[in-house]
Image (cartoon, rainbow, N blue to C red; front, side):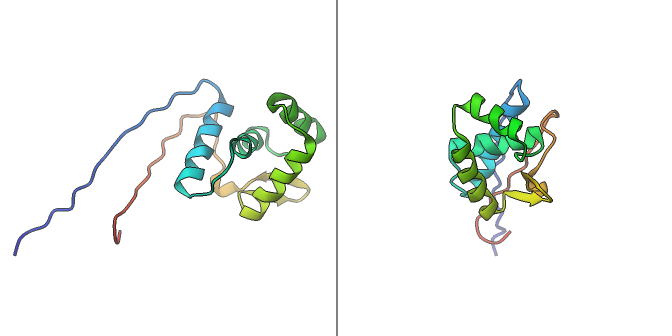
Length: 121
């Protein structure tokens, strides 16, 4: 009987960002792509901003996001509602935060390991 060796392909990618927000945006864009979440660019920006700022519950934080991304408070409310339904944002007391399962410290380097299996793993 022939001995079958499964072939594994390893590809290393390196992305460098000088800003924690940009690093967070890249991370949430990757999570969206891998999990087929189909998040828009604005939704990814809001996720990253929320992760860095800690929450989106305070008026001054929302205003800062609106100014930085040229958007409105109504748009933020719609995005937050959608992301809460998806489970990527959660309400913790009175604060809207990124789900702790996908919250990282973006002031540090991040190494992601993605394994895509064909058939059974």
